[in-house]
Image (cartoon, rainbow, N blue to C red; front, side):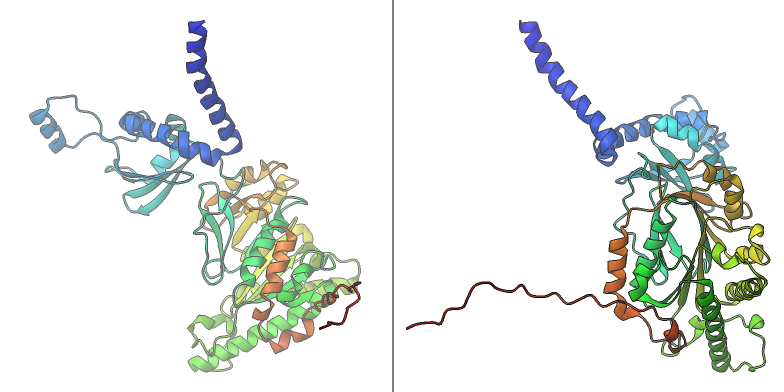
Amino acid sequence: MSDLTTLLEVGGPVAALGGGAAYARAKHPGLYWSTVGLPMSTARLLGSYGSVMEACGLTVAPSRLRILAVKATTRGEIRPVPPRRGLIHPTTTGLRLRLRLAPGQEPADVAASAERLRHAWGVHGVYVTTVKPGVIDLRLVGYDVLRKVRMPRNAVGGFLEVPVALREDATPFVRDYRAVPHGLTLGATLSGKSMYLRHLIAGLARQPVALVGIDCKRGVELAPFAPRLSALATDPDQAAKLLPVLIREMEDRYDLIKARQGIAPSTPDEVITSDIWGLPEHERPLPIVLVVDEVAELFLVATKKEEERRDEMVTQLIRLAQLGRAAGIYLEICGQRFGAELGKGATMLRAQLSGRVCHRVNDEASAKMALGDIAPEAVSAACTIPAERPGLAVAGDTSGGWSRIRTPYLSLADAAATCRATARLVPDLPTLKPFRPSVPVPPPVKSPVSTVRPRPATS
């Protein structure tokens, strides 16, 4: 009996702790990492750093001076030298440490061994970032942060910067229009493309910018954001009228730049290298962000007359993509497919869209349309996005780099409420007033009728 009591006293708490840890790891990975994973991974890293680096081939032969010092002091074994390790900084999602590479090493050597380091130290992922020549940041992520996305508290963008998603290394993915003026977002139905667009519009709605939308699906995607939009076209006919207005707005801004800099009015816009950000603040026009949802609807034609209209709209979009950055006009093009089969000018327009985000697509050709010309290695990653993870995408840039990102959930009602709350920020642009969407006024709330008959006061 005493043995059974002892077993229950010892085994009961151990089983409870083990079960609690297993439950936390499955349902609350952040809590499990902070309580169990972080101490264990830190102990593994500190205890096996030198041997792991040697096993991964990340060590170099010691210098002659080091050999002489070891022989003179300890007479111990002379081992290869790993990269010098800095202090370990724990985070809510993993660990971060800085390494000073040994002579003859490069960041690519460490990045090539990231999978080995991940298994050796028991973490979910290892990512390498170059700080300066010879110095890198090693970011260890303890669990899959894309399974349940929670944006960092410090994910606050500046002007024309919108944190829209979380990277797989637990850093925010920021859509920066000053750095990447034009972007292309592709994704199949229910892939999370609309969620990405909601975050983008909700983030821009809080900033002093003009939002212009083209949604040829009768406005089902962009109409809920009408209180914050300066213009909205819901079919190709309206888009064909709106795009020339944006072209004239762009030309007027170029004339403003020319007048300020003393450039001859006859100078072609293509040779002007400055932009609106060089103008004084009181003369600087507000930037315009043009969002085109389902761009294929602008390319599809059925008659010869529609083909002429299509060619004109495509030419205007290409002009905006080529010259709009200096005038403060930025494009965000969304669709399910975007390739040469859409018609003349499609690939030329796509070449101007340097920011690429590819959600789950229906075929490999669609992934190649989005990423094949800037980050070929990312195509296979985009083709393996599972359907049960909406919002998961692959983001690439013209430098060849890419990363997996996932957008957190944002309901349409919350995004629309943000646009209603920021409706006062809609700028006064006379050229776009004819295209301003009508916002229905909510009916007044009637006060309930009292059924109690009032009685006169008596003394």
